[in-house]
Image (tube, rainbow, N blue to C red; front, side, top):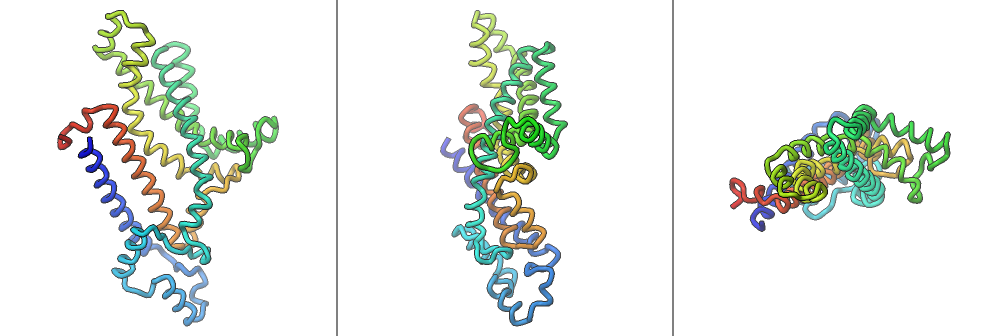
Length: 310
């Protein structure tokens, strides 16, 4: 198991290095000027001073080495949009809201999605199956940028059940979390249903039933444990996708998250913000996938004992 973890950790480091390198290269090939659209109107002395301040006057290879050295030391640089603030400071200020929204959403999605998938499989071709899959179809069909305004208007404004926006107490977080989790609920429900149906048709399940084990024992001890493996595999990327995909929901419900900074940095050619946020989000994805691999190896020992894992 230790070799398995170390190997996955090495892969994670290599992946992060490759992403950082590609981000640097792509960032340098963005059209426009990092000093802004009116950079050519800035006096040459001032322009040269700014280029020197951000290290843009150095050769590309030297910029790259400085870039990688700063990343190793946890320094993502100062923002071009907000020169008085470092990218890490902006992340520390805005990311907790995005993270909290993402965590609440993924918890809702896991609980509701897996429950619907299990019900659909156990009630195959019955009312429970049709109901669960109807909800899943709605989740796939209605994107968050449509569901969000509907929830905000009807539940928040028209009916006054929950706050329509802002980010204050717990009640303010319910509607944006539901809007963000709806599509994920559909994905998890359909995947869990398919996996459950496949497991229920396996010989060892039939053997367990023939031994006289109760339905609850067969379902919880044998079926769910094996059926949930494919779900565990995608929960990591889904979790990161939820966190990084909060932009629209954040705008609809006025959540002070990190998404707005990511988009504005692209429009303004804020090199440090673009690279910093890309690497930050990539690091989250890599860490989550690493944890997912380790959990997957714990749940199913065959994974870590496969080819090259001995």
